[in-house]
Image (cartoon, rainbow, N blue to C red; front, side):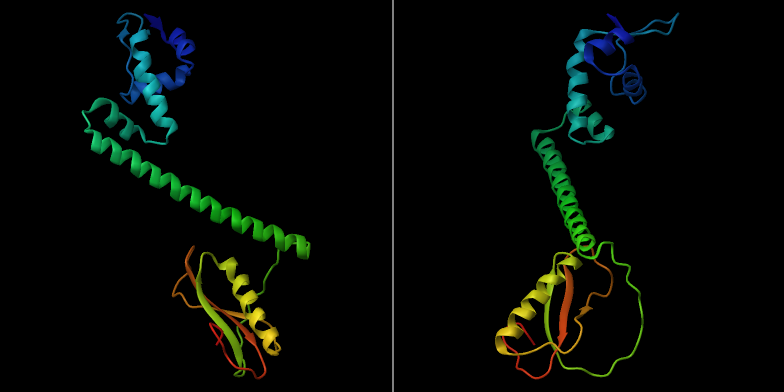
Length: 198
């Protein structure tokens, strides 16, 4: 039998964590001295502790860990829990990739302008204007630059010249973090539509 400090060194788990697992009912001492209250652990408890640590490292909650190590879970159910966790991790990775793309876009803006743009919002009424436009569902709002690239790629070869600053219409009824319905517009004089360009 090992005192909690000795078991902590043996398992390389802090005393604080061992006490927490005891409180949560995940790993209770093999024996508690009724006189001193000292906790004693046995070497036989190391496999259970290692399993707890392995599942925790995979991101499972304490309740899920308790269920997996204390209950008789069928292989199909256990497989389902792991697949669900895999899906959660994949979604987290996708979210981080989108966040990284936004960060790189901001860095590019800073490199080009020397500072992060501070846009001023102004509401005003404008006269009707002829525009060339491309509408598409894009992964994130900052990808609208690809639509403008497509527009300019059509205008120049067809001898159509921009007649004003670029614009964008966001057709979604609310803000979206992904799959954004956006229309890129460029004021033009004359010219005909073709392909996706209207």
